[in-house]
Length: 204
Image 1 (tube, rainbow, N blue to C red):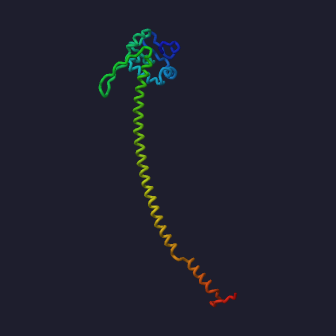
Image 2 (cartoon, helix red, strand yellow):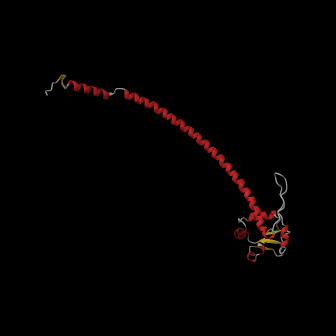
């Protein structure tokens, strides 16, 4: 058991009379020892789970915890440590006692904590998905509105191009100055050159 390992006495050990255990160095306990036993290094979570198994903090100046069934040298009593009953909000029925195996006391505490953390995590993920879904719907509505505006503008441009395109075609069909010049030149070429209004006859 962790509290009986002499190698960790500077961090966690029994108190002087063996009626409680003391975490002498919470920071080192959380960073070095908790990860070797559990899947986290959260000291507050560890303390919270101790409370659910009937442990209580009995000192104000240090992290000392006691349980009537947790005594030095009395390993047989460990099997009597049970998780406190809690009421279900839906059925108002108490959960059955959970018997803790002596060699797995801390492991059992962590297992229950992980279940609680998993439930909290699932609720958080569901809330995040709902929020993201709402945001995506809002963005989709905005994009649909923008698309409708762009379609309207595009249609206006097409209609405007059709109107001006018809005007250009009509202008092309009107005889212009260039056409008149071509007619004058063709007439001049057919009648021959003139000098002061008198047609000149050119010999071959």
